Amino acid sequence: MNKLTSVFWVTFIIALFSVLWGAVAPANLENITGTIQQYISVHFGWYYLLIVTGFVFFCLYMIVSPYGKIKLGKETDKPDYNYPTWFAMLFSAGMGIGLVFWGAAEPIYFFGTDPPTEEAGTSAAMEEAMQFVYFHWGVHAWGIYAVVALVLAYFKFRRGAPALISATLEPLFGAKMKGPLGKAVDVVAVFATIVGVATTLGFGAAQINGGLTYLTGMEESFTLQLIVILIVTVLFMISAYTGLSKGIKYLSNTNMVLALALLVIMLIIGPTLMIMNVFTDTIGSYLRNIPQMSFRLAPESAEERTWINDWTVFYWAWWIAWSPFVGIFIARVSKGRTIREFLSGVLLVPSIVGFLWFSTFGSSAIKLQQENTADIAGMATEQALFGMFDQYPLGLLMSIIAMTLIGTFFITSADSATFVLGMQTTNGSLTPPTMVKFVWGLAQSSMAAVLLYTGGLQALQNALISAAFPFSFIMILMVISMYKALRADRANLDKSDI
Image (cartoon, rainbow, N blue to C red):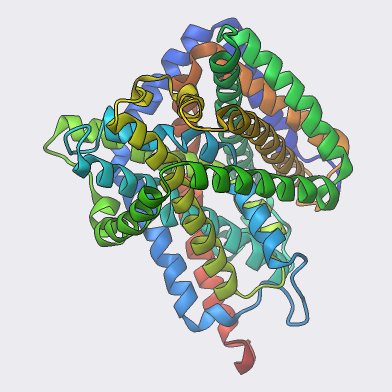
């Protein structure tokens, strides 16, 4: 079961080629990935909006349908983790660095620099900013993760299939999934995971660099970002060596303690009343406008369409690229829960916590901008959070907590991803060899370094959208396959199951 498969070697060669390409000809790599990204965003923006909304509808249907009572496992199986630990692991693997990186930066940017439709700096812009932040980080994002996780958990724990993306498509393609076609599916999933995680690690390294620059005056440079990546690589390899139940579990709980501490401190010393008012009011705006936002493409406005491509399409691609990794990981830690319990937890709890997170840090940054205390909107994206902290009491303490949190999220995400990549390239083994995890850890870190070297944050976004596109088709097939399997199984299920 732990034997390396052809998926390992093919994907490793592709990843190695990509790293060498970026190291030898960075301008060429940036140019080509930029061209691909532009083509996909312009010609397939409608496709991303339709499929992601479709995934949300599928999840909601599964919650309310009779299938919701089906357990992801045998009827006697109990969950491996209690609710607090389960939610902590969902949160750490699913969002992690992104929440810290964009917590203040995205709301303040939408408010003060580039609102979707309103005039920058107005009350309408603030409300619109928050509802689009919720849209990008809420139910739609977690719906993407939930679909992949649900399908994998169902086939693995209910039907005893290998924990492989290809194994979930056997109801549609039969034995072909055990041959070259199945290997191709797994290669696409593994490579999308590498690029997705590498992109997030790149964001993390850039923000740690931004924090050090803001706090100490150290020069912001690729060299410093590379040093950050090297240090964190060593740390997450140590974590990977200790195994899932120890390393990832303890780090996930550490993440939640640090994140909660940062959130509570900011909630207390920030504009508390404004935060809670914005949180309550903009959830209403989000729920009221979610149908329109889900299908908004602005075909008659080039400016608005560019905004959608740069933000909404980018986010949907980011979540899709992350979904093989996050989906497999969530499936792995969710054995024994019913489909209804699983989907309700995955869709709602992290979304609501995320809304409170963005309300807290976003409102605190917007307040400073409104009062002309500091031009947070004019700062570099990776420095916005630290610029905001600097204007509040305990700013230095919060900056230190934030950089520590980025580091622990960095380690947790990379650690979880090495486990998932190892599993996918050893025929679904739930205990992949440590050496295989080390190889994928180095591949992720090298890819992150190369993408930062070739063009910084823009190169990260280009690579992400390009890698996510092919896997999106596989996700559609996974949904169809699971529905077909559920309908076939229903005749054989005991009435107590449904």
